[in-house]
Image (tube, rainbow, N blue to C red; front, side, top):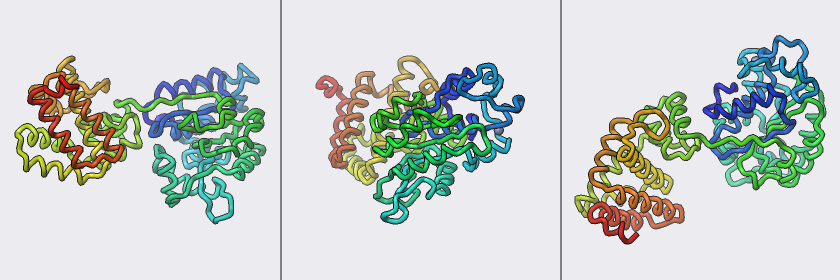
Length: 406
Ligand SMILES: [Zn+2]
C-alpha cells in the first residue's frame, strides 16, 4: 500500500516522511487512533515507504535511518514523498509478502491446548488487510470464524518475534514489525521490552493501537507516539465518492453521521438504500397533521427496525437540522467544511424545516433526538420511545411549550 492509497490524513503522512527525512525516527513507533481511521493502512504504507528501493536508487548503499551518519541519511530517502509502487520491494510489500515486513495481531487457538501465533493465520491476515484495511478487531475475529472466542497475542508469539527480529534482514536494510492491536498483548508484552529498548540494528517496530489505556505502560514509554486523528467529514465524503461510487448526496449524508469512522461509513453505505429523508418527511407530516392512525403506522414501522438503524435515522435527522441551521444563520450552502454543495433535495428540505421551526425549536428537537439515542442505547422500548418523541415533536413545533419547560 502506498501513502496515496491511504484515505486522507495528509498531515500525518507529511509528519512521518519528515521524521524519516530529518532523521528523527525512533526505533519503535506507536500509531494511536480511534477505530475506523487510517492507522493500519498508514502503517502498511509507511513500511512500504521504508523498504522501497526505487525512491532511493541514487544511493547504492542504504545508510541508517537513525542518525549514525547524518549526510547519508539526507540523501537516502531523497525527497520522495511516497514509495514508488513498482520496484520489487514495493510489489512484495503490496502483497504483504515482503520477507522483512513482519506482522503480529490477535489470534484464536487453532487447536485447543496449542497457543496460537500470528503466522498460523498469515494467509487469512493478508486477505483481511487487502479487503478490509479499515476493519476492527471484531471484524477480524469474525473473519476467522472466532464466534465468541477472545483474540490474544500470546507469549509464544512474543518469543517468535524475538527470534524473527534477531535474524538479519533478508532483502531490505530494515526489519519491520507491524503489531496491530497491542492491547491484546497482556503481560506477555513484557517479553518484548528488552527488544524494544535495545533493538537489533535497523529494526523498526510499528504498534498500531486504539486505546492508550489498554496498552502496557512499559511499551508506551518506549515508543514514539504518532497520534492519528479520526477522519473529518470531508475526508469520509470524498473517499465514499472516490472508492465506493457513492453519490455526493449519499456520501455527504453518511459523512455527517459516521463520526469520523470510515468503517462505520462503509457499513452505512451498504445500508444506504434506506431512505431516511423520506422517513423524516413522513414523520413530520403525520405528526403535524395529527393523523393518529398514520402516526401509529409510522411508529410501528420505525419500531421494527433494529436499534442501530433507529439510531442511524435519528442521527440523520440531527444532521438535517444542523444543515438547516447553517443555511438559516450563515446562509451557507456548503456542507460543513467540505467545500461540497449541499445537495438540492437536502437544501429544499432544510429550507422547509426552517419555515416551520424557529431556531429554538430546532435546538429543542436536536436535544430530544440526542436524548432518544441515549435511551435507545439503553434498551428503551422503541414504540414507547417513538410515541413520546412524536408527541414532543408536535408540541415543540406547534406551540413551543416544551421549549419553555426545557
Ligand atoms: Zn518501490
